[in-house]
Image 1 (tube, rainbow over the protein chains, first blue to last red):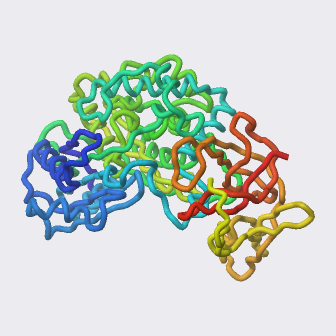
Image 2 (cartoon, rainbow over the protein chains, first blue to last red):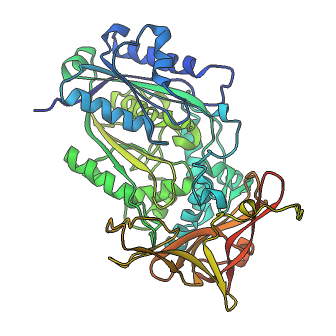
Image 3 (cartoon, chains in turn purple, yellow):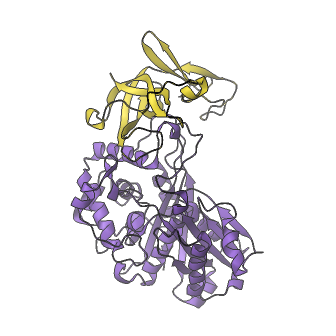
Length: 379
Length: 140
């Protein structure tokens, strides 16, 4: 008999360029607020999982030592941009087997330490050495997707405008300005067809969640249950791959829906991996929110706006809330929990009872993405 | 990119240094691998077949000199050592091999599923500004 995992506390720092703070300060801010949200003390934490891509060795310990929170088991998790989603899955497993009752999950990265530019990739990778970069990968996917579905740059721009509409309502978002689809199209080209405002920014930030048993979460009030916590890695292919569909996302989300005993039609609100607006469209389809090519209509009708039929990324998503890579997984969980508790303020989706988060990670040659983590949360 | 010819040390002039290609009869073919056990082809060559796990039957194989451009993008972001902009793409060769590389021409001159062939040419500059040669793709 395994124990269901519940989330009793969430918090995040604002995301954005914060080079004057140390990475440890960012981590501390998020985790202390999360403990307070959960109504617990530092000494109540049994284990910690910390997800980060560029935080450096022993990032969890470096954040926790000044709080007197070391000695307990601390595990640092790296799965590129899915690092903290993968960390959350480990926390849920610790609760499930009964080896811990209160587990702290942190997601953190400070990309301003890297000096700007695209995310540095594996130096020994043959494709990287020939000019491969994440924006180029997403751009090639976008071009193929547009070729097969008839999607246009206008659709890509509308998704960005929607993200900003939501981000403007989120005090934690890196960007809080509304922009028009025209402004998105007019912004400078990064890797065609993707212009600057179709791409998520780099930045710094941390998010934290307290994962615990039903008993402790119910004692706090407004418990949120983790109905599914699924992780898969990319399928290695050296030949043809359909780049207009994310096989990895289809596979991971199917497992998540099965674990939760629901289907995509039951999802009231979703936080998905919109590193680039073309990806968001493709993921509507890969997550089963619509059929192949159905994303065009969803965008045109505004279905995925906060007040639409299928709200996606009410936080502003990676595009607007920001993407300090390791922090994103838990930041998506923060939004999902606030939505389910009815605490999302101006970006609240009415009556949200079932939330999905979807986080993919990184690029190495031959794989769609290195990893994909899908969580389903319910009230 | 700089045209400086300087003293090119062979292991810095080409990428990869192993020069996994063969030029003959005006064609350029990449040297990939073929698994004698299950018939899988792949590039670059490695010492194990990822499909069947065999390590003993893996052998070098000349891949097709032509293919189809599955998708491409013109990269305008500044990438150290690379011209700006430059075009990259994924090309499907025969025997189910997909290769990533730079594509000659601008994006405006290309279309999805464009027939292409493999050529050799500069792909970037190394730290001294000296051009590095590798395989790339051109319309045929």
